[in-house]
Structures are given as C-alpha cells and as structure tokens.
Length: 454
Image 1 (tube, rainbow, N blue to C red):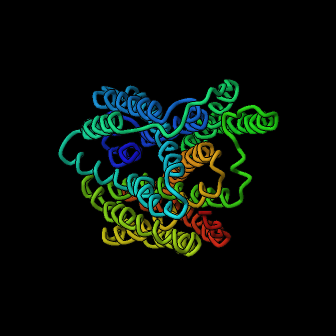
Image 2 (cartoon, rainbow, N blue to C red; image 1 turned 60 degrees about the vertical axis):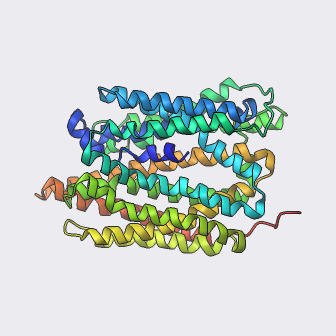
Image 3 (cartoon, rainbow, N blue to C red; image 1 turned 90 degrees about the vertical axis):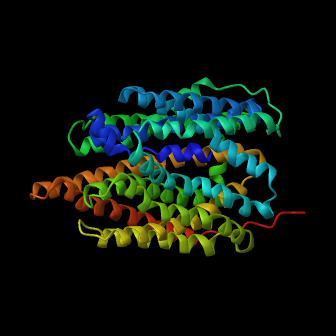
C-alpha cells in the first residue's frame, strides 16, 4: 500500500518536466493524477463485493499483478497517451489494496490496540503521498522521468513475493451475486462526478464550458439512482454492491467529512506547491522534493505516537488541534507566500501541516471504521476510500483552477508568467483555509467509542 500511494503523487514534481517534453499544458498533464483518482473512484465501490467473493490472498495477488503491469507499461511509455493508460492500470490495483489493508487491520486487531496499528497505517495514508514529490525530485535531478517507475519495480516484486509466501486467508469466500446494474451506475456516477470536478480547469481557461457541467450532472444523477438501488436491495434481503448502512452511523459520517476535507487540502497542496516553487521561486525539481520532505517526515514520525494517544484519550483532543494546525497553515500561506518568500518559510509551514495531517488522519481512520459493526467493515472501508478519491479530485481540480485564475489575472497586469504563480497560489490556499476551518468545527462533535468488551 505504501508504494502504491507513493505512486499517486510521484508525478506531481515531474509535471513541469512532462509538460515540456511532451508539449502538453498543465491542465492536460493534471490528468495523470486525475485519471488515477478517477479509476480509483470507479473500482473502489466494487471492493466490498470483491472482498466477500474472493479470498484475501487472491485479491492481494490480483491487485499487485495489475499494479506491476501498469508500472512496467509506464516505465517504457513513449507518449502521453500510453503513460495515461498505464496510470489507469496502476490505479485499478491500488483501488483493491487500500480497502483490503483497512479491513484486514479491523478484522485482526482488537479495538484497544487499533489506534497504535492504525498509526502505522496512517504513515501510509498521510506520509506516503507527501514523500512522492521528494523522491520524484531526487530522481528527476539525476535521471529521466522513466526512472520514477523503474524505482518501484523491485519494491513491487519483493512485496508480491513476500505476500505469496506468507499471506494467509482469514475469511472464507462467499457465493454472492454481482449486481451488474449497480456496477454500471457506480462507474457512471463516481466517474462522472470525478471527471466533472477534474475538468473545472477547462471552464476556467475557456476550452470547454459545457462538458464538465454535463458530466457532473449525469454523474450526480447516476449516484442518486445508485443510492436508491442499494437501499432497495438491502431492504429486500439482497446483497447490495455497496452497503450504505455505514452512513447512518453518526460517528462514521462525521469522521468521514473531516477526512474528506483533510485529503482535499493535502492532495491539492501537493499538486500546487511544486508549481509555485519552480515557477515563482525558481528552484529545481530536487530542491522542490527536499523542501517538501520535512513535512512528510514529520507526518510519518508522529503517526504511531498519535495512534497510541488515540487508544488512551480518544479522537477529539487530537483531531481539533490537528485541524487547527492545518487551517492555520492554509491561512498563513494565503497571507505570507509571494514571489519573494523564503524557502525556509515554506518548509516550516509544510512541517506544521504534516503534523496536523497525522493528528487528523490517524485517529479518524481508526475511529470511523471502529464505529461500525464487523459485517460492515468491508463496505465502510470501500465508502471511505471512494470518498478520499473524490476529495483528491476536488482538491486537485479546485486548487489548480484557482491557481490558473490568479496567475491569469496577474499576467494580465503585466507580471511575468513564472512570478504570477505566486498570485495564483494564494487563492488556492484561501479555499483550503475555509475548508480546514470547517474541519475544526466538526472535530468538536466527535465522541469516544465505548470500550471493547473483553
């Protein structure tokens, strides 16, 4: 899971390089990340069914094989189109592993220790995406972008080998039927919404004003029909593709809302900061990665400690200060960053943001799913991971769109296009600040779960 999520943001620093080498715009290049999230959003809703129908070992092997195939194609991709297809194949494998990771943790770890174990999972969820730009910057400073994928191949092969040798099944596959209509509705619904969000930039630059709105509208309608169908199937005793009962659990839903906000801000920041650092501050790809590294290290290092604290004190004393850290960073970046900002300021703010992410994500990944009955772990995990992809699509699209708007207005005033990135990024962080402030309010409503029965 770590290398898969690392891969999700690995191309963020490489985007300017790919734009120059393949003669594509930032809006087009953004699809390397958006297509990844789009595929995840389409595949993840089916994982609740897959985890019942397939053994753990079979699902792991299938997912890792898909990810390996996609990485091989990406390594030798001669054109943008081939690279985009490779990213889609990678995403299909990633979409199967993430719910499997969380469901396995919930199934095998008792409630009293889940925070500690989820602290390690939190390193995967929050630190891995932040490490992507750092590793990418180092590789790009020495080799071509193809080596971003070469680096992952031995890790994938070793992981697959270890899994085949030691992984054991802890569930028995069930003969559940697949609701094909729900699969189609989910693909149209989640795919349409993510595509619509990802295409916000095309509205901003005037290349397409109708397609994003139509896509979002069709997706929203399909999701409404999908929701009604799942509820009806459950009420008639039939197996829904995605059981929506977790959404009736208040603790789960509130936790989900805060996770949504945190992921939107984190992935949006990971996308726009490298553009700002290279364009406005003029630093190299390697230096961009090194600038973002301390925040990733801080988030990863704090995760296990936050997990142990969660086991003792519950979510609210951790989530509220964590959300406050994230909100403060967003507003400070809005107020302080410009074309003359010191690199040390960016590093300091990013470290505080990483600490806030660890304090929010680690407790809530545990808290949200632990509030559900055991039979809903798989579906609850699928819903959580699907909404994380929607959050990533929203954060990436809106941050890029606001960056483009602000930069365009600055260029119209006669400012150099590179320096204009500084004007654009503050709009993106204002959006992030508003969202993070809402997360603080939601954090105050969280309550501890009842102690586990012996």
